[in-house]
Every structure is written in structure tokens, then in C-alpha cells.
Image 1 (spheres, rainbow, N blue to C red):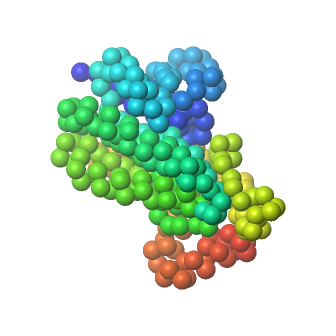
Image 2: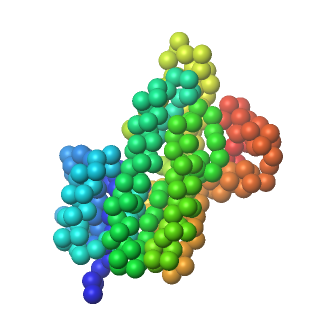
Length: 284
């Protein structure tokens, strides 16, 4: 019997994935952190070496089947199994749907949604044979409600929520648990990988986009939630004998989801618009 559980975390070069890899490794999990570009993993590799953590950084592109196959083959060869899969790889996109190309929307889904499906399809057979396993999908509070000028990203998270709910039924009898993590605004380097459209002064959406991005920057500056908090929540969920289906993180997420559930559509849309475009309401 293995002395450590094996966990694979995708997208570990920064943000939530970075914090989650370190959290699990420091808690004695045999941790594999994946990155698309190994040159971006120098910082986490330095910490791993310094602290002598049970963490290995591997190359894995969630958009490439062969990359996934090679990575999983290495993990199985090293550890003999995979107990936990944390699907974190993804990026944000802001802009009016009119000005985001079909190609860009497909790319958003390719990474945020289909990348997750690729990993699940590759790892579920391993977990099914083990008769146990945990799949953690990193969603967002906007996987539960829509917000303006964020349609491509929001819809990819809505899709992830539906996927997670559905597969939880079919995997339960094999001892495989499915967990959704829904953070609000987190203090990360989110803007580093963010793709923005409609912020050109020639765009008819420019003024709305300017307000939307200003709102996001202010929300990130004022957020008390961190990547470490998300990582700690994931660790708690994975260690639980009977984890919840969903873990909402941050007062903004908790409050917003409560408002979505308690207000009418018309009332909720007004609440969102007042908050994002008029400086009151949303997230408070």
C-alpha cells in the first residue's frame, strides 16, 4: 500500500494552482504539478528543492491528448496510481460577445472546459479500477450566475458546473467523488493571463468595458481572499470523508450566490448593474 496519496494539479505555474501544489506537497501528498511551459515553473521548483517537498513539476498541455497521455504515464510509472485530480488550468476573457471571435470563444472552451474533460476521460479509468478517487474542478462564483462583458468565460464555467454535477452521478458507484470549488474574486496575477476585447476607444462598448475592468481591479485590490485560502479549502474537501459537492470561497461569492437564489431575474440583474457600473450593490 502507498504511504502517500498521489495528486495531479493542472496549471501550477501561478495563482490557485501554484498555491494548491505547495499546500498538498507540504501536507505529504505525492504531488505532481503540471505546466504547459516548464520555463514558467522556476519559482515553484526552487521552493520544492529548498524545502525538499514531494512535488514533481511535469509538462502537460490540457489541449493536447498526447501531452496528457505522456504525463499520466509518467505519474503511473512513478506512483502506481492517481488518487486526486485537481483541474485548475484555465484563463479569463473579458469583452462583449460581438467583438470576441468564434475562434477565441472556442479557445476559451478548449482550455477551460474541454481540457478538463480530457483529463477526466484519461484518469477516470485509473480511479475506477482503484474503486476510489477524487476529482476537484475549479469553477468560479460566475459558474452560478451571469455577469456583463464576461460571456465567454462565464459560459465555460457554467458548462463546467453542469459537467461536474452530471458525472458525479455516474462515478459515485465506483467510489469516485466530484467536487466543485467556486471562488469569488481572489488576489492573484489574474490580469497577467487575461484576454480583453472591446477596450479600444473605437469600440461602442468601450465605456462599459472601462467601468467593468475598473470594477474588477478594485474588487481584486479589496479582496481578502487568497490563493492559499482556496488551496486550504481544497485540502479540507479532499481530506473529508463525505465532502460537499460545492465549496464557495469568499464573502463576495457567498453573498452573490445568495442574491442570485433569493432575487427575481429582474432584481438580480439590477443588483449586478448597480454594482459593476454604478459602484454599489454587487459583492456587498
